[in-house]
Image 1 (cartoon, helix red, strand yellow):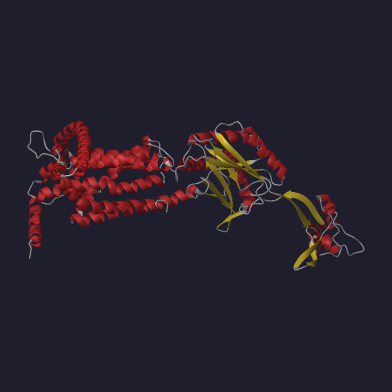
Image 2: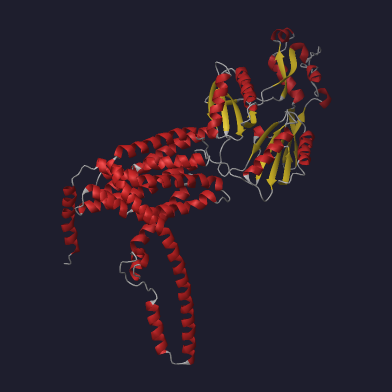
Length: 634
């Protein structure tokens, strides 16, 4: 869902480029002769004169000019054409010098490649062993890379939510907001700091995150914000809130995608008290670690409440039932609709309940008369135990099981490392025999995303293999070409390690792109080798000649792709945190796979292709009569 538009854009662009390359490019290539750089200096070659036709047209126009107006137009045209030719000549001169500068190292590299490839083919196991060793090392390095769902974006704003103890009045919440705003009034990194005291009246408020005891502060950073600036401001605000230990603080940011808290831990069990103890213990463990910030638990201080426990025997002795006593308490405290008053077309309830001073405290509740119609009044405390206590703030359930949820933001650590640290903390500090631990939030989404992307990665390899098998009419040659994919993995892992980038969904998108990109070089190489063998060239000679002749197009396509991805990887900008890992993956994988493909793929072809040279010649002869027959006009 995240990259559907990107995939459609790339697919449509490739289809259009295929049509252009088969139609427009050949037509444009036929207009001009070959450039001098395509020939060696000592070899004869045709003059490259793209402006001859223009010059002839100008001459004809000059001879046909009769009037002064025509001479004026003619002079203007000649001037413009002369200027155009001068600019074109200057550009051609510069490009020729650049081409000579680039071709000199290329010629040396091509000469070295033609000399080294036959030696590599003579020692295949040394080369393949080195490639396999590099792949194993890459797997080891990959296991040390961190994991994230989506890289965090640097944004110009974030939000802080402060939850005061239940029962806190609105004016105290507002006093906290004003204190925080005053503490950061001189912060040069903050452009604006907006506060909202109490969220219970908002229609969009979350019931578990609303009330007079909840404050929200929106922080807008300055124009020159960055991820470092955001982290620094966040830490300064955490330091400010550290002076209020009884207040739960949570930092959030506008997400490009809708995701849960980075780390959510579910503690499951049947005993509510055991779950609450485990939740408090895990919260303390996470708060003691520098890698976790804004730790929040659903096991929080509850709301004050009054509990009434009836003495059934005492009530029965006085001729009272528990239901009767409970109804009387409800009528006195909450009230009862006695009748309705008609006002115009409206019906207004008339609520009857005890006076405010008769129900303002626990002592007043104890003195409530539970049998007002009797001649012998009985107070509530005579037939029940009335005490003030604290009830649970929230009771969560998952799959019909009680759970406590501990959530946290991360500080200077990736999601995978954070999950591993939590597992280690729990292993060293058991939470209880009946407590089961499960990870939710972005950790659960990451696992689901990786599984689906691994399937997409395998499907991409399978589809590429099918396309190549149909084109080569062989099951072996596509298999040889697919050896480019593990070689690309080596470069991708090394690039991620050098750039200190964790493995994320974006990186997997880059790996899927690599499957379609890296096989192109091997396809070009193997196709040329097969053509030479069909012409009667021996296998090893065809491998060397084919690889040497395809060195230039392989390098050209690789460099153009690398230069195309370079701005995404290195030039920053808004959203660079999401784009850069994908570009780094493609650049590293393509660069290393190209170098290894030029050596490993010819060796694999030499080892696995056991067909005789004569079979290729016979196949070519079998195809040629059909082609000739199709080319004969009726």
